[in-house]
Length: 77
Image 1: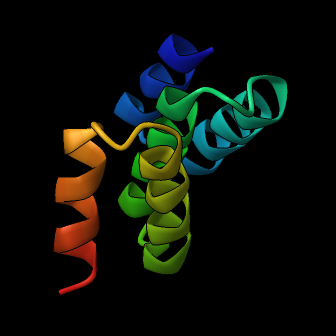
Image 2 (image 1 turned 45 degrees about the vertical axis):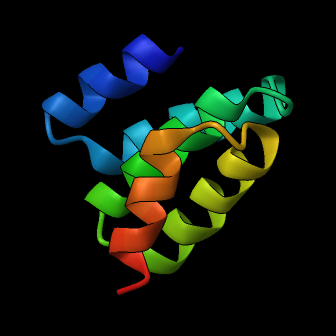
């Protein structure tokens, strides 16, 4: 599912990618990586608050998620 979501992002189908990643968080709620991917899709779509919320969930599930921590720092500036 993540591969499909990133393919949609590359094709500039941001809203479709968000839906794919959102579904993935419902299917795999304990996976930090799916929350990280959804956050990236929201960030790419200009949805800063939703990106922050989802990066925070990703880091909560995996405190060693260096990308999530870095993206949160950038988004909160």
